[in-house]
Image (cartoon, helix red, strand yellow):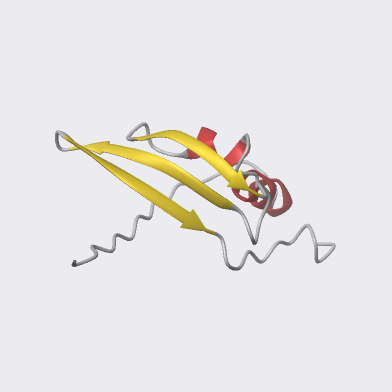
Length: 84
């Protein structure tokens, strides 16, 4: 069975400190789901929830199809943890 790999990126100016931005991205319970495009739905945190070790499942609704996804955050560099 062939696996399809997708890479998604988006760039926009953010009126927040780097520490605030990293906290939002690393928080898979509340912050991260709020910044995802509307095509990402039903995100569930299965393990962890903040930074490395977090496991989630979600759906992507696009082009008339629903794709189910799983994530494992294997590394998350955080300025918060570096005291910056």
